[in-house]
Image (cartoon, rainbow, N blue to C red; front, side):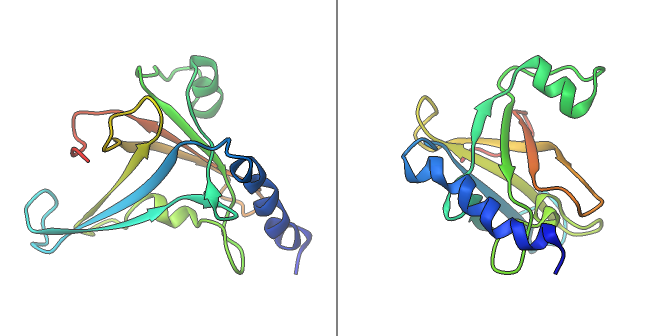
Length: 158
């Protein structure tokens, strides 16, 4: 194995330490909604939920600043109020991590991906978001993924 693949399990465990200490109070859940009708938006549908984690603990989730958004998305991007940053999320490795393929659906698939954020200061059922983008390296050398979650009118209620 390459050095990166050898280090990813340790990186994942290190990222779990704040959660072990009770410092990761927000839960981020990926919801994959598949429409059995074959048409996005037309019922019926089924939801499959998967909590994002690092080493079995919640990932970091924080309200974004304009500067952070510009660093990730570029200086021309206008940030919406209520935008959250999720990550770092450890990339997939043998035995754990999160694949970037799980942040979007394949073209032509009758499905959508939403993210539900629950935690202090949010409504009891959580708040739903759509990922604006996943800021990740496509070269397979990155040690992290970062999600930018923007609120929108096109997301369902939790």
